[in-house]
Image (tube, rainbow, N blue to C red):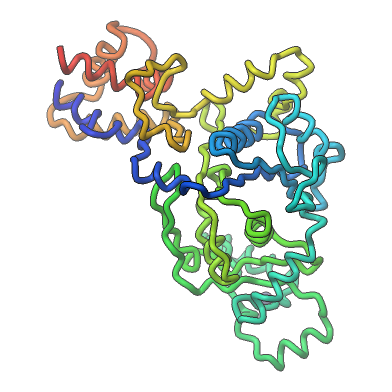
Length: 407
Ligand SMILES: [Zn+2]
């Protein structure tokens, strides 16, 4: 039994299944003394503000306030076809209602405006021009039909669709000829450099060799609007953003963004990717789930403070519980206010627990689960062990196991 429990605990760090704690060194990377902290919440007004968005905004707000910095609201409205009327106003209204108003925003203005991407097209065009001039980007004249065909062919061959970089090797003469009949080509960024590794403030060291799995991405569309990759890099640079705190779905794209910073000769900000709020079954919260919209909570009479309290503790993975014992608090984990959320579903935990059992020769998985149930709840029967572990959270699980080991 002790072997099993020790394996789950792995001395010196939390069980792997329960998330990775943030070390002092990573915490130190958070801010330099005297450095100006500027963070941004940058939603697309393609829907009203929902709980997931509020949580991302809240973490940015808390981070800015903790470091005496600035919290910026920027609206990424470059996909004009998906804009929802009233969403831009709703996002700002709801931030105000929740009590986490931005310092700079479309409504409040500020020194780094405009805060609507559709009003910053000139900046993206300038950056795209600079990239083309240095050869870091190139015009792509491929028709939508050709790109669609590539996609279909890849899917038919059970491969991941990717652009085949065809226009990369056009000669200057060919480009001039094509420009005569198609004066507004898309601009693609050349992904042929080794992506730099980076230390995410939540997830630790990361490296994604994007060039080996992706075709060159479009950074500026033929209609003059940027794609997310170029727009966020250009805006974060010009707005002096020091830390990018955004959803973990962008973790993989960060390598691409770092290559763009390098190609433009700009120092990159620090990155902290926030685990997403998920449904009980582990699926992503969707904007289509109307009951998650903030205005529903406001209309139903919820107090903003209650909502913020819930969101703060939702998958925060904070070292303490909701009523932390200050004398036992681990300050190395507190510095940036962030740790990886447990981000666990019962399924992932079950898989990890099975692995632990497999490593114990001659012990049945069912016996291991019985033992853990007793250790965690003192009961012989009850809810599934993984469900208990998710509800208890990593700290409580660790403490209960530790208690049995020490008895
Ligand atoms: Zn092309």
